[in-house]
Image (tube, rainbow, N blue to C red; front, side):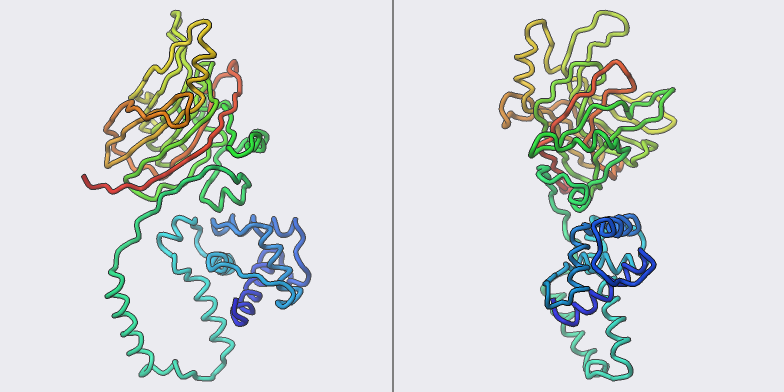
Amino acid sequence: MADDDARLFSTLFAEAFEKCFGRRLGVALTESESKLLSSRILSETGLVIGWKSIKNYSLFIVRGHSKRRENPSLATLDTLARYVAGAPHTDEIQRQKNESHFPYWFAYRERRAGSAGGGTKRRWNRPELWIPAAGAVLAALLLLHPFRAAAPERFVDDFRSLGDDSLAGRGWMVGNKDSAFWAMRGRQPGVLAMYTLRGDNWPDSSESPRIRDLLFREIPADCFSVEVHLIDFFPQRNWQQAGIVLLEDTAFVKKGVRLSLAYNDFAGGFRGRRQILVQAITSLGRGFENPEEVAHKNLFDLQPGDEQLVEENMKHAALRIEKKGATLRFLCSTGPLENSSFKEIAIREFPFQPRYAGIFALKGFVDDSVVAPVYVTLFSLTPDPCGK
């Protein structure tokens, strides 16, 4: 970081500290103070600066720049400037989409540089010099880079890092957090552990729809495919399930789609078959109490003595939803090996504009089902062209 920018960063960080704590920065931040400032920045801006980075920045500033080298990214500088300026709430996806030029940092730098310069007129403040130069630069940019929005990139997560700051930094959000079970998300190294907790987004006259520990992120495109991979998930109680949910909102007021691996032996009081199935449902949201089951594909019948064989064939499972316009295509893969092929479960027309894709596990609004772990090894969200 250049000396001028390092001084500006120090000033900006001190302003952020003063806004949070109501006093001037004098000594390096403690861990608790760093976590509080990180939390305040996330709450007010929607963007993440990890508490360890904040602590290191404070050391860099109070001990003198020569003692420790720090090089905060433009994104970090912009986030700090947003916090100080009280900018509107956003998230990393929207910033990359609309403000990838980091306007708050550069506006802060320009304002500070202007105030430091006093009345001295620099050579490049003369319009007869900078207007022709700006025109030449603009012409070159037009020739080399025609105006077109950058296509959203594919997002893939293998959940090797499960810290709250790390997840938030990758664009994840958690809805209806259950602190006890969320704290156990790393119980098996290298994968995300979720749990079939009490809850559902299926409308119920006596319960408000909710999914605990719903892990979700924004969808950056109108057409896309979303995929989740699971290991060792063998549901054995009614309503116990895990999978993918697409939502227009996270309060379950608007439309949504759910694709899940589930267990079923419910037959309205009759003796039902014990099944492992793939189920897809669509919901029109609040006020429409009857969702539509658009797919109910039986994968395995659980006959006495076959449980171990079925469990082996459920060792690896994957679900995928492909959306192109109003067309939804549902696919599933299960097998003892990781590379089992996808099979089409159903195709359905369902016009809606999902804003969020999530991973969920639940057991419905019942108390007689057990809480089982669900191990997630991969999630991917791939924007696709909407043309034919």
